Length: 423
Ligand code: IMP
Image (cartoon, rainbow, N blue to C red; front, side, top):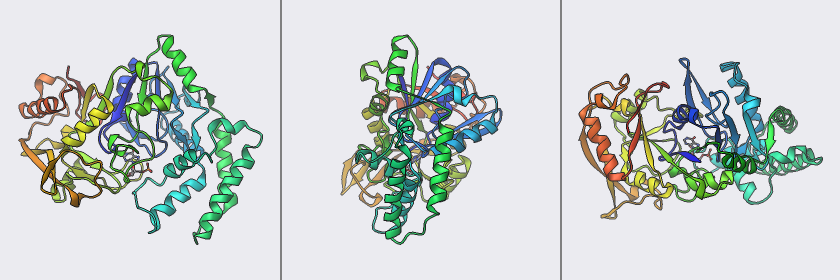
């Protein structure tokens, strides 16, 4: 099994890369998160954002798995499937997507709870996508939730009703104005009926049997290393394990079966939501990179914060994931800048440090930048690494030396064909 992961704060361009390399695999399996993800893929000049569906969906014959570590929101999932069908009616979604029986369900009250926690001053504002991801994983850990496989249990409706009522009343007791209970419940059960068009499987058995039978699996990570619940910039993180270890636990596959681990990073940094971001650019250059790179949340539309490439954070992400190959995206967005910066380390309390994941805010840390000559050539149509401008080659060589892994792919634009295999 090979793995593709984001190494920053998400939105690195994993979807495009997975769509591209999934041709070499039999199965693409998502292992964490849910509708909080936004994996954008371009097809025939049109763009679609996948949320819960794995990014192998566009390649005929690939089996896509929604793994055990994911959380499935029936209402959102139904909408996503319908959108995909109207985007490309030839895609046999029901045939090529299977869902783990053990994946947890996102209930509508969890979304309401997410919104409430984000907006109530008694809670830490994380800047979530408000998809109910945190409350779902929390209820999973509390052992109070229902799973995909429960949908066929005779008491499923009663159990869901009980949870909906409990959380709904809790929110009402906090003085919240909520949508009508009956409408919310009805919409959920309608979506559950829709979800039943899909096959629910014991995904760990399916995946391990497939591996034994010689099939190739690509595990698709959502969110990214710095948003990991344990090793990210807590508390401004997501609620799942976004790392390579999460691929093993979320899919039920032994670490011994892992081969390549592709880490995807932009040539600069972005993040949506709150939290520490030492290399953040506050002047107009940040705004320029944002508009050139169309850096607006593909899920929520929020403007992304922009920063220079953060090498200590990247080194950390490479280390905790065991990344073997780097995929660099969006270097084309920096084309034309006279110079580009990379943060080599931070200073905190007057001391040099390379760790941010334990810190809470930008005030605690100052990033130290190394400036490099920018590249003026437009690289978006280049197909050969030998045609790349010398300054970009210097940038890539610097990264390879610092990270001690090869830059194997360089993405040169959003299009499917805009990628150069470097080695
Ligand atoms: P949640 O996952 O919706 O709970 O949001 C927690 C944090 O993760 C917030 O800062 C979100 O903006 C961020 N986040 C979640 N999913 C993604 C993603 O796919 N890309 C980028 N950021 C994300």
